[in-house]
Amino acid sequence: MAYSSEVYSAASRVLEERRRNAERLASLKKADVYARFPEIKKMDSELSRNMSELSVLILRGGKDLDSALEEMKSENAKIEKKRAEILVENGLPENYLEPQYTCKKCSDLGRKNGILCSCYKEVCRSEAQKELAASSGSAACSFDNFDLSYYADNGANDGTNPRRKMQNYSGFCIKYANEFSADSPSIVMMGKTGLGKTHLSLAIAKTVIEGGFGVVYVPAQKLVSNLEREHFSGSASDAFMRKYANCDLLIIDDLGAEFQSSFANSAIGNLINERLYENRPTIISTNLTGKELAERYSERTASRILGEYRKLYFVGEDIRFLKNR
Ligand SMILES: [Zn+2]
Image 1 (cartoon, protein in one colour):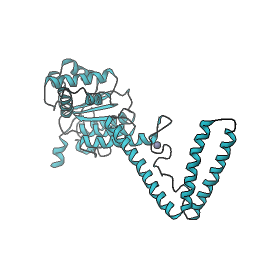
Image 2 (tube, rainbow, N blue to C red):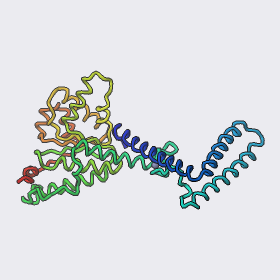
Image 3 (cartoon, rainbow, N blue to C red):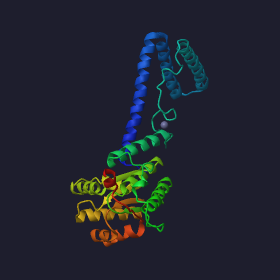
Image 4 (tube, rainbow, N blue to C red):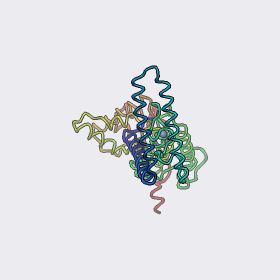
C-alpha cells in the first residue's frame, strides 16, 4: 500500500470530517437534552467531578487507594445507570449522547493501538479511485466495457485474428490486475492510436486500486512537465519524482507524445531504471515501435523496456474512428 501523499492527506481529511461531524452532532443533542432534562446535566457534572477526583486519588496513591477507587466506581456506575434510565424512559437510546462515529472500531481516528484501521484503508482506496478518475479524465474505463466487437474477427486462428488476439490480451490484463503484487512484471502496450491501450491500462489501474495498492496514472507529457517544473524551479522538493518512483504501480500513458528534450529523455530513463531496480511494476503505453523507442530514448532505456517488460502488441483499427463512423 504505497499511495501518493495526496491520497493519504485526502483520506485523513475525510476521517477528520467524520469525527468532527459526529462530535458536533453529539454536542447539539447534549444541549437539547440538558435543556429538557436538567437532572442529566447535573449528573454529567457530577460524573466529571468524580473523574477529576479520581485522578487526584490515583496521583496521591496510598494504602486506601484501592477501596477508594472501588467506592467511586460503584458511585459512578449508579449515576450512569440512572442517567441511562431517564434517556430510555423518554424514548431515547441509552448511548444517545455519545458521538456516533462512522467506524465503531477506531472512533474515526483511522488507527487503533498504532495499527491502521480497515476504515482508513477503505477511504484510501476510494480517494485513490477519485485521484485516478481526475488524472485520467475518465472514470468509465473498465474490463466490463472493453468492447471486443470493435476488433475484426478475421484471419486465421494463428494469432493474426485481431479479435482473438485482443481477447487474449484482455484476459491477460484481467488476470494481471486481479493477481497484482510487487512481483508482477512490467508491461509495455504497443500499437497505433485508438486500439484500446489506455482503456485496458485504466481498467488495470481500477482493479489494482481495489486490491489496496497505490497506482499513479500519468500521461507522459504531464509526467515530464511536472518533473521539469520540479527540477528547474530550484526548490529542494522532489515530491513528483518520489510519487512516480515509489507508487506500487506506475502507468505512463502515451510515451513518446511528450515534448522531446534531453531532460525528458533522461528523466524517463532514470524513472524506468529506478523502478526496475526497486522491483516496482510499471505499465507503459506507446504508439512508438521498438525501433522508434531505441531512436528516441537511450539504447539502454529502450532495451530495458523491450527486454524486461512484458510486450503486448495491440492490433486493429482506430476505435475512435470506428465509433464515429
Ligand atoms: Zn476505523
